[in-house]
Structures are given as C-alpha cells and as structure tokens.
Amino acid sequence: MSVKEGSSFGFVDRLEALRGVAALAVSVGHSMIWLVIGQETALATKAIWEVRGIQATIARAILSVFSGAAAVDIFFVLSGFVLTMSFFGKPLTINRYLMFAGKRVFRILPTLWFALLIVCLYLWTIYPGHAEFLGASDWFTHSYQDPLSIKEVAENARLAAWSLDPNAWTLKVELLASALLPLMVYAMGQRGKTGTVLVFMVTLLLGWLRRDAQFNVIHYLYMFVIGAAIAKHGAKELARFQPGNSGIVGCLIAILAASICFPLWHPFGADLLVVAGSAGLIWAISSGKEGSLLCILDARWARFLGRISYSFYLLHFIVLYAVGNMFLHVVPTYFVLRQPLTVMLASCVLSIGIAIPIAAFAFRFIEKPFTLLGRQLLRPRSELSRA
Image 1 (cartoon, rainbow, N blue to C red):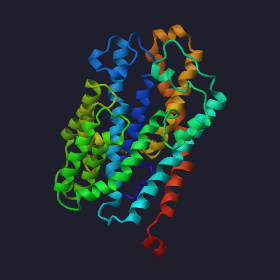
Image 2 (image 1 turned 90 degrees about the vertical axis):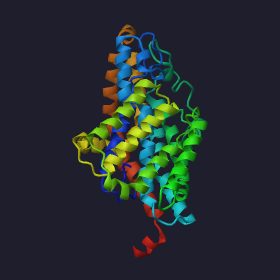
Image 3 (image 1 turned 45 degrees about the horizontal axis):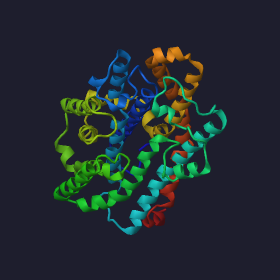
Image 4 (image 1 turned 45 degrees about the vertical axis):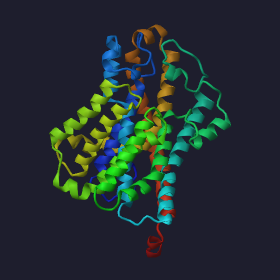
C-alpha cells in the first residue's frame, strides 16, 4: 500500500501508516531474537510467563508489543481490504482478472529482486563468511551458512525458497491469495451478507484444517476475506457504526493478548485474536474515526514509514544480519553473553537507522516506478482510448 493501489477510499493514508507501524514491529521483533538470553534459546516459542530471567522477560515483553507474527496478520487483512476496494463493484472478466494479477506481479517482484541483489552484494563483498558464535540463536546461526549459488538465487527470485530473505515467504502468500481474492469476492456477491458469511466460513475451516502449515496460503485465506468483507460492507455499515476509543482499545488488547499468551509462530487461536483486532482497527480507520488513539497514524514518521513499508519490510533483515554479524565480531563475547539485551537493542536502533534510507531509495527508484509501470501497461482499454 505504499503506492496507492487504485483505492479511492478517503482514509488510505492512515491505513498506509498502519502498515508502516506493522513493518516497524517486524524489524524490532526480529532484533529481539538473534541472540540467546541465558537459558532462553527461543523466546518466540514461549508465552511470556514461561520465560525466566529479567533480560529474557524484558525481551519477551518487547516481542509482545512488536510481534512480527501479528504484523504479518495485519498485512494480510489490510491487503484484502485495499485490493478489494480497487476492484469491487466492477465486472469480473478474464481480461480484468489478468490485468489485476499482472499489476500485483509488478507491485511485488521488482522490489523483492532488488532486496535479493542487496543480499547478494553483501554476501559477495562484505560478508566475512559463516561462523558459529557463542550467544547467537539458532535462527541467526542458520542464516547464510551455505555458499551462495546461482540456483539458490533463482529459487529465491521465483519465491520457491526464501533462504536469502526470510520475510519473502509472505510474498508467496500475498501473490497466491491475490490471485484467489477476485474469485472469492465474486463468490461473496455484490449485495447481502450470506455469500460473505459462507466464503468466510469455508476459508476459516480450511485455515483450521491447515493450521500447522505456516507457509501455506490456505492457512491465511480467511484473513484476506475479512479485509474484503470490510471493504464490501463498509460503505453502508461503517457510516452507521463508528468504533469509539474503547473499541479501539479493545482491538489493541486483543492483538497484544495474542502476542503475550501464544508462541509467535501463527498458532490458530492467536491468529484469530489478531485478525479480530486488526479488522476492528481497519474498520475504525475506514469509518473516519477521529479519536485521539488514531492520531499516531497522522504523525510524519508513521506516514513516511507507511510509504516505504514494503521496501523496508524486505530489506531490514539483511541489514539486521549484517549489523548483528559485525557486533559478534567486534563486541567481546563475555559482554554478548552477559548483556544480550543491550546488544540486541543497539542492533535494533542501528539496523533500523541504516535500513530506512536504503528502503527510501528502493521505494523511489524501484518500488514506485515499477508499480506505476504495471498500471500503465495494464490499463483497461477504455482508459487507453480516453488517453
């Protein structure tokens, strides 16, 4: 949503800022799991009360607020909403469907390929080579342990693997869900709620059946349907019901509770809480709610992060890995083992500070131009004739 995706919805700026906040959460969350803290080798796999130690508890609390798993769910609900707004109410023809799918390819893949180029440049030039360090988590240690090959680059470029950019698995879900979304919205119907309920119940059942398939699109389809349902029914329903500040607080509590009480790897119950909370937030923003709790989304930094959120989301991991690898080479091992939280907080600030200008460059020269090119090349014939 960093580039307006054809939606004429009046409050798209706040939704864009929400995506920026979610992308920031992914970055901060990853910054809290690349080191081991005492006996806690995998904080993200535990509820907060299962964690032992002051530093580990603080890190797990930060992970609860900045949960990458929750952020991904928010991304998917947002995508369902924004994409549905771009085509809902228009006839579903083969030509229109192919143009929609083509625009998604232009929107997603060029920026991914740029991020992979950055990864390759790092591995070919700066990277000192794989090594195992005391204090590094398995998640960090297993990254980039094999020599880079053309086959691996090709597999990552076509989303058959995501070893070079771990966040890229969500892009495969986005592309496949985007391909199915027009068909699901068509099945929901133009009017009434019966079709919407049926499509939601079917996709929810499929998600439950594939609840352990974290990287499978079927696991997440109902999230896109929830976003589509808000877009479909929003024009009438949102005008009558505007969630107040108490409702917004309830949505935030639901998202936070999921991150506190569940492991951060998309268990079905946690996802349901996050989806309900994020749907409520999108509903509140879409209704034009002017409550003070939403004013943070009007801040310049939130709007800026929203614009570059996709590029930032893809680029932050390689920057974090490079910063973390540098720290492990420079910072004394005894300090890493005794003060891992301090090291991770420092890596968080430094990696975000480095990733933001790179992401801004990618947005301006890769993401935005290719998104606009896709729109230009895949314009409907009626628009071309008027032009």
